[in-house]
Length: 165
Image 1: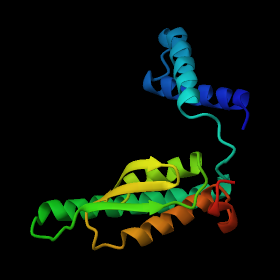
Image 2 (image 1 turned 180 degrees about the horizontal axis):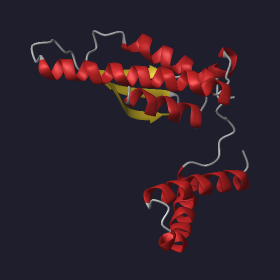
Image 3 (image 1 turned 120 degrees about the vertical axis):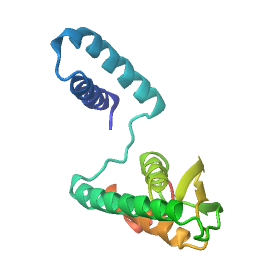
C-alpha cells in the first residue's frame, strides 16, 4: 500500500478516535486535527505501509477466534489465581515463524500476547520467543494454529508463508 492512502486512512482513523475521546466536542477540533496528524506521522515512521493487507472477508472469523481465545485466557488466569495449588511450569519457547516479515508477524506477536498463557518477548527475524505460563500445555500447537489463522487473515497460502515473499 502506498504512503498517501495509508496516511489518509490512518489520519481518519486517529481523528475518529480523537472525536470519540472528546465526545464530539468541537472546541478541540483544531488541536485534535494537529494531534491526529502527528500521531499518524509517528505511526508511519514506526509501522511503514505493508504490502500485506488484511482480507475483510477473513476478519470476522479472526475476530471471533481472537475474542473466544481471549475469553479462555481470562478464565484460565482467573482459575490459576483462585487455585494457587494448580501446577504451572513457566518458561520460554522459541519458534521459527513461517509468516512473511512485516504486518503478518506483528499481528501474530500481538495476538499471541493476548491468548491463554503466552506473552511475546522478542520478535527477531523469523523467530519469536514467547514466555509461557505453563509449558506442559500445547503451546507450540497453539502457536502454529494461530499462525495459520493470521495467514488466512492476510490471504496467504502455505507456499507464501514459507519465505518472505
